[in-house]
Length: 350
Image (cartoon, rainbow, N blue to C red; front, side, top):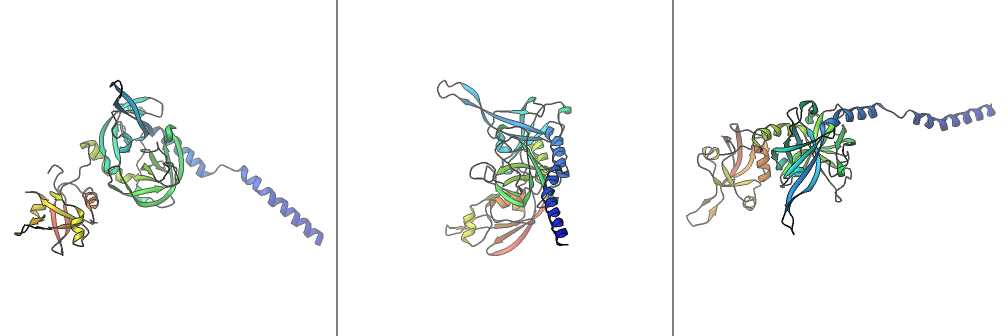
């Protein structure tokens, strides 16, 4: 019996040793096949953006075109619109788009939103060359969702990286130091040149525009960020129609934030109220002068709609969620008392 048990143990050990060999043979997985299929499907929608500037030679004083940088873009629709990051095309005199089939197309800048690090370009390419991606819903993302990033890091075109959604509702700074909110954080490797490229889910839907990496060295360390597609969808129509992000107006001049802090209030102080503006009609007050010649703080805005306002960036972001003609509630502090006023937002020109 003892001899039989020893043989069984030995046989079990042999089987155990051989198990990993058979496991390695079955290497392909459903997830791997999904990655391959999504990459093949999405690649034709990804373009290479070359930014060139005209400079004057310091010795000959002749004008010459020099490369300023490269990045990535994604085809938005069959009309030739392309989405990329604003910082990819900033200060460009000439922009060239290289498509998946290696054809080159001059691009014009249609609209820019520096505060969101987004830009809309347009090329006059045949519709059969334009293959946009279906738009997803970034509001349905959860931490752990698989994501794919396609871009041109370091000039290496159509590079794929794969990862997951690492976190949601992050905040990063744009090139003009405005806060971009609700940003997607991912561990899919994003390097210089990936900027402006698509972040895609496992259904092949566009869920974000890759915009930045968090790294002292400038290379990927596993923390990248993308602007959620729901934000992009809300901005692009305005950029196409108006060239800029159309932010409605309250009709006020904003004072330095430290004025409010001196009174122990977090908010945006009103310096002056324009005549015949929504703020004037709602009875908002700016800084006034006392009969003794000193200045007295007026209203301090602490909320707009459902948003808390602690600084100018908060106020501008809150306004961008609304449209001209829309009625909103403004929460403010006046003489130490919190009060509310309702007003109808004016167009940006007012």
